[in-house]
Length: 266
Image 1 (cartoon, rainbow, N blue to C red):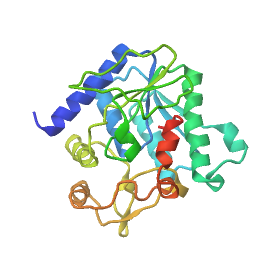
Image 2: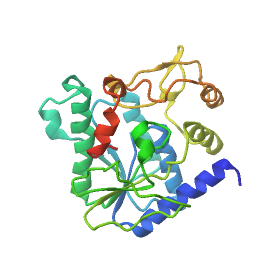
Image 3: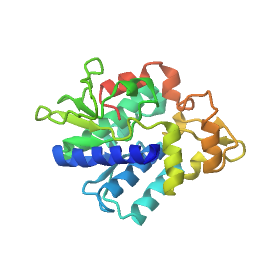
Image 4: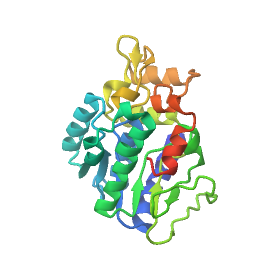
C-alpha cells in the first residue's frame, strides 16, 4: 500500500463513518479539484451510488466554465445535486462591490446556512485541506459548529491515532473533512492516478492558469506553462507560491478566511 492508497483508504473510512454515525448528510461540491476528488472518493465509498445529495452554493459570480462543467458532470454521473443561491442577498444588491468579506458572508456563508436549514442537514462533508490555508490547519476531521453554525477554532478536541469524536450535542451542526491530511500535490497525483475528469481551467493557456477556483471577480490566474497533469505535478514540487495567491479575499484581510469560517463559511 503506497501513500495515495493510505490516504484514499482513510478518506473512504471517514466518509463511511460519517454516514454511519451522523444524521442527514450532504456533500459540498464547489467544482474545484478538491471537492471533485471528494466526489470521486464518495462514489468509491458506496460502490458508485452516493446515499446523500451534493450541494453547490451558487453565488451567481462563478467563472462561467465552472457552471457548464457542474451541469455536464452532474448529468453524466446522475448526481443528486442541490443548487442554491441566496436570492434575498442578490435582490439587495450584495456582490463583490460590497466588499469581499461582506459578499462572501452573504452569498456563501449565509447561502450555505439556508441550505442546511431548508433540508435539515445534520452534517456536511467538505473538501478542505490543512495545508491550503492557515485557519484550515486548526480544523479537525469531525468538526463541530454550534446551533448558530459558529466554529470555535480556539477550542478543538484532539484527534489521536484516528480516534475521531463522532458524538455531538443534538442540534449542533457537524462538518466532516475527509481530505484534511492531503496536500495539494497529493490531490494532483491522485487525479492523475485515477484519471479523474477535472475542469480545464487548471491547465495553462497563454502562459497562465488557475491554481484555485472561486468567484470570477475574486479569483486571479498565476503565471504558468503547466498544461498537463505531469507539468502541474512537477510545477508544484518546486513552487514557492501559496495555493491561494490568486484569491482576492485573502489579500484584502490576512485573517479573512478565519473570520469567515468562524461564522460558518465552508
